[in-house]
Each structure stands twice: as C-alpha cells, then as structure tokens.
Amino acid sequence: MILRVAAASHLGLVRRRNEDAYHVGPNLLAVADGLGGHVAGDVASTTVIDTMKWYDRAVEASALATTLGGAISTANDALRQRVEAEPDLAGMGTTLVALLHNGTSAVLANVGDSRAYLLRGGPGDGQTVQLTEDHVYRHLVADSADVPHLPEKLARFLDGRADGRSPDLTPLTLRPEDRLLLCSDGLSSYVPHHLLHAALRAAGTPQDAVDQLITLALEYGGPDNVTAVVADIDDQ
Image (cartoon, rainbow, N blue to C red; front, side, top):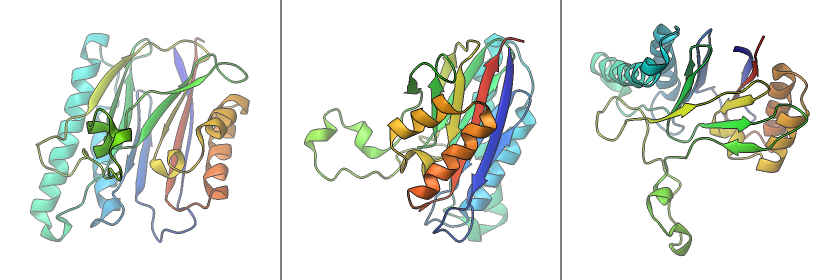
C-alpha cells in the first residue's frame, strides 16, 4: 500500500498569524491547530508536530496504536516542558489529528476538533464519511439537541496537562482507491459537507483536492487558518 499525499496550509483572510502546523512523512500524517484566542497557539501546534515527527517510522500492525498513543503522550509532555521553561507560554494548547501506517495497516488518532474524513471508492465515486468525533462539550450530552446554547468549546485538547488529554485511537482498514483527508477546523467548520465531498470526489489528484479545499475555505470567508492533507491509497 502506497500513500500519495499532498498538503497545504493557509493563513486565511482574517487571522494575523498561522497557528496550524502539519507533517507529511513516509508513515505519519498529522495536523495540529493551535487554539485561537489562547497564548502562543502557533508554538503549541509546532511543538506537538515537531515531537510527532520522531515517530514517523514503520512499526508492526500490533504496535501502531501504542506507538501513536505514546507519541501523543510525549508531545503533550513536550508542551508541559516548554511551559516550565517559558512560563509566559502557560495556557497554550492545540488540537491534533494524526494517522500512523505501516503500508498495510493504519491507526487514526484525534484530540480536539481537527478532523479526518474518508472517501471510500476514490475520486469520481463513493461517499465521504467523517472518521473522527469533535471533542466539544455538546457531544458530552446525550440529547444535546434538547439543551439550548451548549458551547462549542473544546472539551479535550493538548496543553501539557495529563487529565483528559488522551486521544481517541481508531484502527483503519485502508483499501486501494480510498482517499483520506486530515484538516483543521478552518476547513470543516466553514465549508459545507456536501461541497467538501464534491471537492474530494471531483479532484483528480491529492494536490488538486488540496487546492480546491483551500479555495473553498477562502470563498467562505477564510475566517480561520486552514490546513488540508489529502492522501490517496494505491496498491502499487
């Protein structure tokens, strides 16, 4: 199994700095979104991604989940150590969505509201499904539709503390012609799902898909930084 990957990040049309960070490597894909309105979101996202890079290697299928979970724990520790060294950074935090694979098997991890999507069947066919669940407070209530004004505030993210920062880990079975998207909420929170699906389905290559998705985010006002990583699964 080969992943053909493209990625891009854009400041957007409102923010003054890009607090997203991403990594595309042989075995690891990751997107981190530093928390807007907090201290040094860009430092948080970059610290996490720089730590995750050390785990970009092939491991046995049985070790994928523990390796990825351990990488995220180490990245969270790196945030804590950074704050201890630079107290002015206290309060920084970031989301994370990441995929670790070994060529045949894969595990997906997420903390926060950065998302992963799967287009099964590849370009020109299939349906796009969201693989991750946003860690926001309204999802903690069983009948959230009956409770008005539940906040969209994140219930889980990485900020160096140990309590409640563990990721969701999901084993994935990838097939030839699948198309994966990892993105920050600068895309998923503003571009309607049907347009996101249409872009993934219509684009001939991962780079075409990334370009179309970034353009859509900007057409919808570009209120936030936007990052997209698109990977096509090939059996050659």
